[in-house]
Length: 224
Image (cartoon, rainbow, N blue to C red; front, side, top):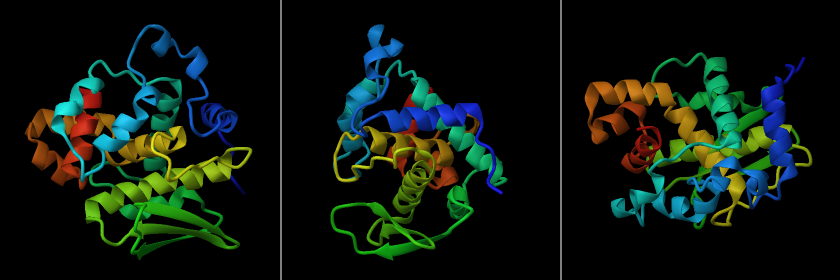
């Protein structure tokens, strides 16, 4: 029997379903934006470029100063925390097999393929899912993509109407949510803060969490 969805998670999928997939569904009534704060949705394209390992420029980090997550991002982070608890994961690095918990009713298969334009993609089959990852990506990049695509599976299963995904559009809000989910799963806030206080070294942090230096740097900027 499928578990009952808690109210906060139901609220998340209601918000996702109410949007167009391109803009934040709360953009017209976001208190952070009304106060002149930094909004992830407003800077989606900038963040996408920042996370592109081929165009990384540390000098663009100014825009993450004073970052505060909005309502929908807080709910996505809570989703990631519950995902880790369900998988019994209590310390880094997060094992990739946790991704298979996204849909317990159907099989999830991961395939490495020579993608040319995308880092990853998902395909819904009659009896399950296929997650495609770019075989040319480094393992740490592929791990991040795996959990990015995992969010899309969760959203396809929960959002009504079917989750609107615009995988090739830079700045798509739903893609931004998937990026944030992957960050929260692989680099949970409390773990990052605890480890950073101990090691204070970016390369070592990336190694501990098995992520790229770029993803770790962005996460640290969000949290410190």
